[in-house]
Length: 272
Ligand code: HPA
Image 1 (tube, protein in one colour):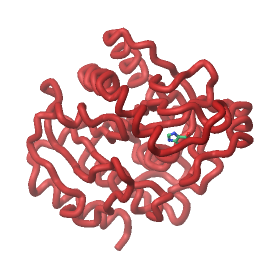
Image 2 (cartoon, protein in one colour):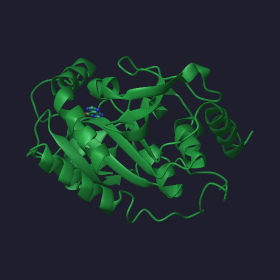
Image 3 (cartoon, protein in one colour):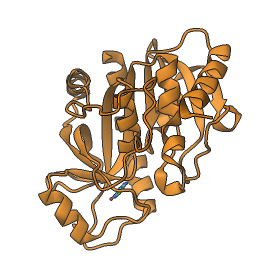
Image 4 (cartoon, helix red, strand yellow):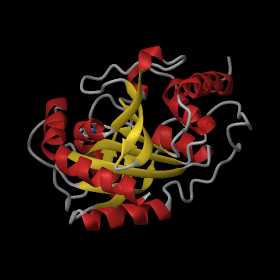
């Protein structure tokens, strides 16, 4: 079955359960547990019950698609995402985006955990993704193009919506949050980067590094959705501090800032 047909089947299944589809979808990375808890849930799917949906394998990532409201605003929240390093194909990783596309979702918001490359950043800081670097990895659009999903050569000149960035900045101001705006570099993982790689990425203009987001964002831009990305700096990138990186550190910092991060994301949703 083609990606389009799979996504259509999944979208039809969701439509059979949900009447009024929200215009905004948010992907919750690690550290947004409190946000998920504050959603007034109207319907919740386990990924395993959704036709064609893969199942996330990373500890700390649940697998739920939630339909509900946050402060009266209707949203879809994806709790748990799929990474290429787990062995999923490009098609599997981008299936949720394509389902949202066929459901008529207009705004695609991604959050993630990232390592800080910029020396002015510190663990716990948040960054609005202004642009990304993804050229080290194969594109998820590689292969025959399906014109029903998007054009062959999509522009990436404004991958992240300027309008949504402005709204996020306003939300940060309301939360009295000192937020950064910077470039997210995608490295496929699952190993953390080497110190030499991080020095290289800093020269290349990256402020943060992570193992997700860019594949989905490329598909969402191809799908003509408005994209907003927010990164939580869970650690300084490799080689900056004299200590090895661990997934535990990523989870622990995520936990420390989850209240602040969740309050901010709630304010972002209110602005949209
Ligand atoms: N590198 C890559 N991905 C990450 C990091 C990092 O330092 N921290 C959280 N996700």
